[in-house]
Length: 265
Image 1 (cartoon, rainbow, N blue to C red):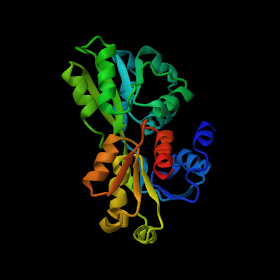
Image 2: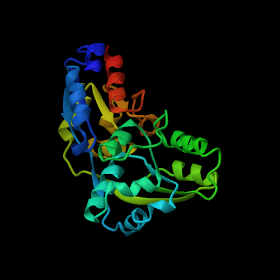
Image 3: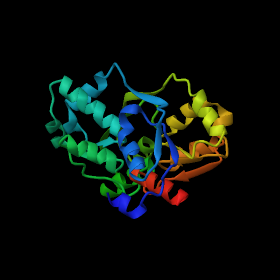
């Protein structure tokens, strides 16, 4: 409601593509509709939990051995807590350690499940999270065990930054992002004809899959704005030749929508 009062119907009539996984698109779609946009739901990835999570089970049953458990996405939270239930465990296992979240959405996803993070960085990227953890630990993590449930293709920046300051990091892949198989030729045609105002991207994997599905000619068309959730996603879009790339500030879904509202105001 605050976003609506501040921006009015500043996206009225704008056709904006939502590429994130279908089960996670709802909050972005609703926020766009609030400002008068016409969201076009075109998921280009899906989230697939990994089958062999024995290492995660072992870690969760011995969490007292870790100083920190670090969540870098709401996907990791959802999968870990789904497995907790399946394995007969409860969120109380996290009472023996400290929990960090990369951003407000991940923190909220944890809080809803009964675990309030002890640390959320002011900037929602891996480098900022590593710096915040190091600062909280007095400048050194020597001997500290850190558990990071993550995506299979997660960036190494967080783990590398923590290891550089002495941490014993156990990064366990719990899910992968899988490109969807879909015919987006109609969307590609709309883009090249100037019928799409913006395409939203919430991860580098959505950018790459979008290019694969619509083709490079449509993806690099100057006739739409690529709205990205943060600097890593924006960098991927620029590397792949996107013409106009804007970046959410802060790096959240509301920030993403506000960046679009400012662009089209």
